Every structure is written in C-alpha cells, then in structure tokens.
Image (cartoon, rainbow, N blue to C red; front, side):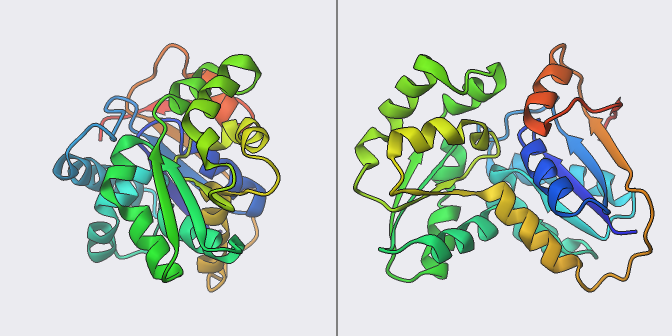
Length: 259
C-alpha cells in the first residue's frame, strides 16, 4: 500500500491532507503537525530547516514512500535540503502551485498571496518566473487570513472587509491568484467574490495532491484499507474543532509526540 508522510507547522497542512484523501483514497497517510513550534513564518531560515529535518526524521520512522512538505514556509527554506538528505521523494507546495498558475494564466499577470515569511522568501516569485518566463508577479502577504481561517470567520462581513483591504486593488490587475498558504483555501469563496470571476484561483493544496499522484504512479502497491494517523507536538485545547474545519471531519485519534 502506498504510504504518504505529510507535515506542517500546524493545522494548515490538513487542507493538503484533505486533497490527498480525495485524490488518493487508497493511500495511507501519516500527518505531523508541529503545533508546539507554530508559526514557522516568524522563524529564521536556519531554525525552519532544523525543525523541518526533525519532522522528516519522525515521518521516516513510518516508512513512507514519499514525504510532502505541506507548509509554504518550510517548502521555501528547507525543501532542497530535504531532497538532498532523504532517500524518498520530497514534494513541497510551492512548485505545484506555480506550475498550476502558469497553466491557468492567460495574460501572464499572476498574483500570489501568503504569510509574510513565505512572501519575503521570494520562493513563489522564483518558481513562477521559472514556470512562465516574463510573468508579471504581484506578491502580497495577507497575515490576517490565518486567524480568520482558524476562527472559522471565512465568510460574512468581517472576512469580506479584510479580503477587500488586502486584495481589492488587484481586480483587473491579474488574471490568476495563487493561494500560497495552506490556510487560505478556507477563504477561497470570499476571495473569489471580491476579485470576481475573471480571476482564476489556484489552490496549492489541490495542485500538490496532483503532483503526489503523479509521483506515486510508479509504486505497485497492494490494495488494502487505507490507514490514517495523526500526530502533533502539542495538543491545543481547540485542536479537534480547528482540525475538523480544515480536514472536513474530526480526526478519530490524535497522538502527541516529541520530535
């Protein structure tokens, strides 16, 4: 059976896991949320790389066929280090999102939104430039989107006002927008309403799941019931509630570990 290891700095990577479950229902998954050290976006690149190595080492103990870095900040700073060091394929969320945006854009005017750390890293800007040379990229940090998603304020007046403040001036300036944070798909509907139907939204979670499916094609896995395990480095009081919002259902069992 194909087994996929997935990690994120917290709960946002559960949107990637949800996309993997939909696309690959027969694959088993092991998810690690480093909730004791979240957020990664405020940490130095050196610290992010160290945390990322710890997370990957834990997942390798579960014998995955590949590892998914379901964290934009970790993908920006640590992906290449993991690819050099691990014996299994490693897939991040930035390259698949950039390729999907390049395939969707009509004009080459692409927006990308993410946390301050992800945007400051320039990783999406570089990936988009490689995927579509000459692209006009507008990169913008939208830090308030994360607490909105975790609080469940993903529609209504508050969400619309925040989205309008961050993105209203992009109407007519871009034709494609990359949701470059794993929290942001929860705000996809209100973002679409603010920007209008002429702007295509690219969900990096869905693009990453498609990249994982491609990578697993070579694995001749025996059919068996899929098994899904969830680990966190800390269990916040509201974790089940927040996890259910991101995953679509509450995880049956969550285990706390020290990585």
